[in-house]
Amino acid sequence: MAEFPNVKFVEMGAIMGERWRSITPEEKAKYEAMANEDRERFNREMEAYNASKSSIAMTSVAPLPVPQHGYHQAMMPPQAYMDGGHVQHYGSMPHYNA
Image (tube, rainbow, N blue to C red; front, side):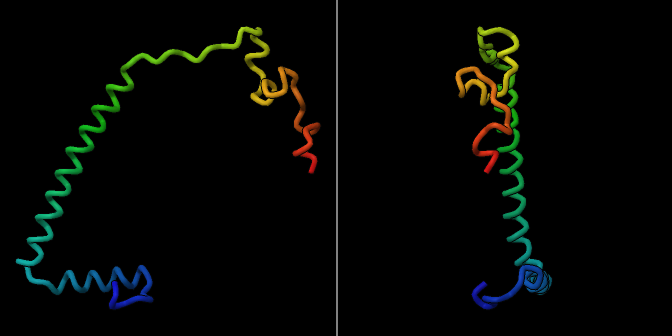
């Protein structure tokens, strides 16, 4: 807030709470109505999101291809494939010895 440029977050909460308690019930009703409308909008959007998320989960997803080099190579760490299929131990890799 421009009135309190250097106020801490906790202090700002106290100021806002004090102001909220000081307004009339008619003024509060306006803000409470806005909050209720927003809550209803949020619930509608969450229902739509969850419905779309569950429909995506229901679709079949093709499994990842398994390398045709044999089972032992399919279990190799990713860096083995970067080196043409030869496994290097971490200790022998230059960037780990720095």
